[in-house]
Image (cartoon, rainbow, N blue to C red; front, side, top):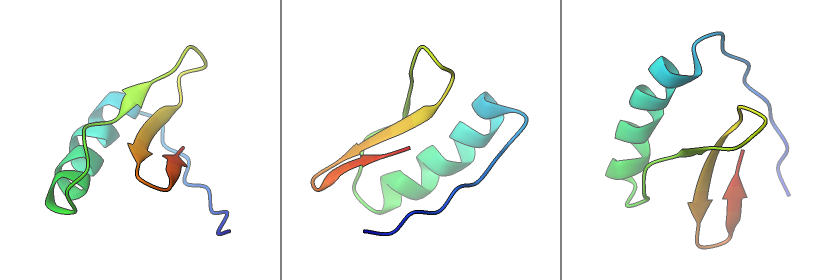
Length: 48
């Protein structure tokens, strides 16, 4: 398992960027959980 963290100050602005990348890779848009983390649900699990 690969564990890497990327911290950002503007989660919604960052999500637009990562949503575009994830769409190219065939994944759905990210979700923001109650703790303010962006989550991407993929076949093998969850990217946080």
